[in-house]
Length: 431
Image (cartoon, rainbow, N blue to C red; front, top):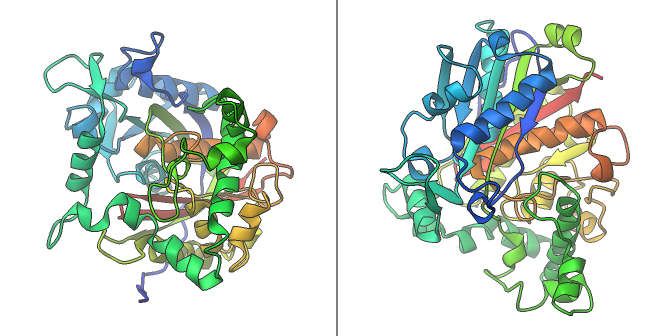
């Protein structure tokens, strides 16, 4: 079955917009650590926002408008207007603001919203960010610093509130089935059923290696180190052991997201202003956007292709022109599937690049250099902000041990979430 949609072409921005500041908290399990237990959304979002302002060389008085994003405010925070619950934590009292939520694509839409405000001329300096605490969930009748564990039952209830139920329930597209639809098609098209477990285990090993070196990551140990801990020969042995069982036909436990808490923020302004303020701004050339509801077969594939066509036609740039690709891989196979769909990797060759470690941070076609949702951690709507954080830091050459081998002049960021919103952005270094 194929699916095509005729979208109106993207129009150039009325004025160019760039990122001048970024900030992020570590991804964490706040309730499990005495040093972070008791933190709430205001503190996490405020931390990231203040860091972004410092990075931009501005203060709260310079911000014209701020945007707050969260994947599930009523589930995680028990509030309906979360932007108003964080305002006083970073000096925004009385300033205009709004809130939005697009499931796991929320952080990517956060940039699109901020860019639209600045490109329109309505505001010059906009702060946009996200905060998600899906691991440490608020009580409905207690202060925000008192929290409880966000269990799988709550998560499933949230999914049921996200997905349309016109004629079916969320279970129509249960995670362990729906996540493999695109992968299953790809495996059969390329005849790699006997190779895919090896490919995904290599991808998990390389992603974990990147995450372990990243100070913001939820994980700080490699699979080789875990193998030693459990008295196994090496990472490959561990990844094929009972500690990494299959949760679907192809995907193992290490190929699924790790839910956690965290926040991130960035500052955008007109590019001409950015160039006067800093020597390391990052220009947003455009953002393609496509939405398909959950019952659409292979929705991730078709929405990716559609959003990519939009941005390719607008900019004249293809995935092949990029130096870095970020995929939002809450199913790990999305790393090479999305990269190939966006022409960053050659057609039918993406799995080979992953298997040969060419998509690792130290490979020649790096993908998801922070380690991804399955190793770095997944704070739902906030994860998109962390992907943009990674891109900006890579463009500046500030990622230390996980810095890619060549200068990152162009990067493509594919955002995806909730079986609905999917974005594809191209960023350009102004350094």
